[in-house]
Length: 304
Image (cartoon, rainbow, N blue to C red; front, side, top):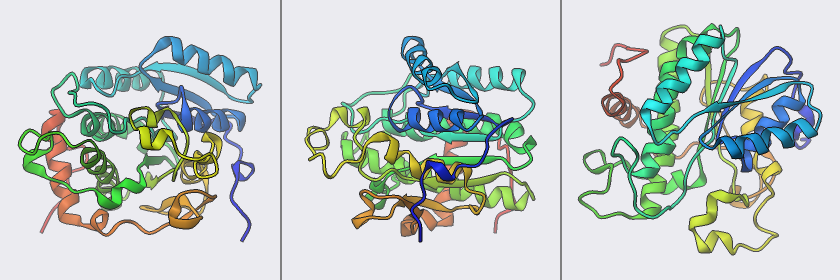
């Protein structure tokens, strides 16, 4: 079977896409490719200066589409609400949302709202953003939601009575794995609710394998990886791009690299970790996320 590359991305003219963390790394490469194919892309990121630099780089590539900064700080739920309101007031629909932004094994810290940084940014910020943009995503003829997870989801464990590591003490890698498993459980829960609502919005996921980006800045082991192991960001973005654009994608598809241990290669469908298929865990995460974000359920469903 032929390798899937960015050349396979269909025309994205008239599509509106939002990519979080789009000023650097695989988020930037995702936004670049969507714009090159004709989409209008919102770069959801915190720093205006870095967003402007990313926009200048994309515009220098002479894309068929266009790019625009959307102020968004996923560590601040008020900022998330403001970003969702800004998009909703300016647009009738949102065709693609790539939940890409994240942090990996930072020093212990809390979001503005008091949550452990990795769970707060990687999961809760995106959960709140999706919940508040659901009307626009569902208004699109064939909307697509992509959650960017990680191979670290394999060792993730949800500890619902200690999500912030207050009792256990902060463990950077355990916190990262928890947040990345949460990404997949969120997509599973969302996909089931969308099916029950007979919605055309499609929720799926991807992971970039081992990719050299700024995400690894807090991990000396990851920073010192040999060049032959870590992929460049443009290749690491391909699973996200396939999940966002391939017309053959179905709900809960998961894309990762096709090489050894899914560390590098070209995107293919990969199996979900067993824990990410647990419906009870997904429902518990959904309910707890609603409480953390102080949101009403946007897709209530009957449960056994």
